[in-house]
Length: 144
Image 1: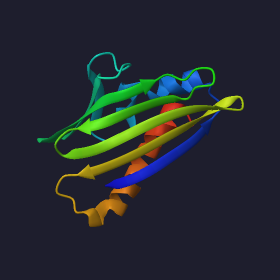
Image 2 (image 1 turned 90 degrees about the vertical axis):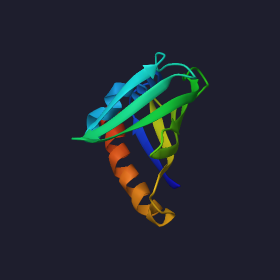
Image 3 (image 1 turned 45 degrees about the vertical axis):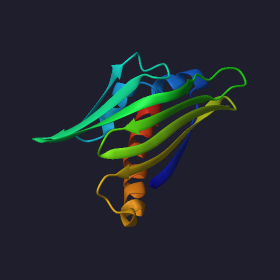
């Protein structure tokens, strides 16, 4: 599986940083040909499902992700959200964390993913692409 880690420091307080990171439809605003929406629940509880649908003409695939853990940040507690990818073409997981640091926050995005049919030899390229694409998403969400 390809693995990448993204870290961003922001002047946003943890609660605002968290709200932006878990605004699921906004995740698709910086991923070409992709829309993201909550398809089960509110997107704020374990068991809810977020769907990323990528489509270019007749070619399309879905990336359903189940929220398996969701803890909002609070005094002395970091925010943590774990999503498990349940689709056919894309497997793996992502974890988003928010920690209070000084007068702002640190956002940490860790992801492991595999694309069905792609050999492990391609993992470094997939991880590099993930860093670029999801780095843009993270920067967009945080307003950096």
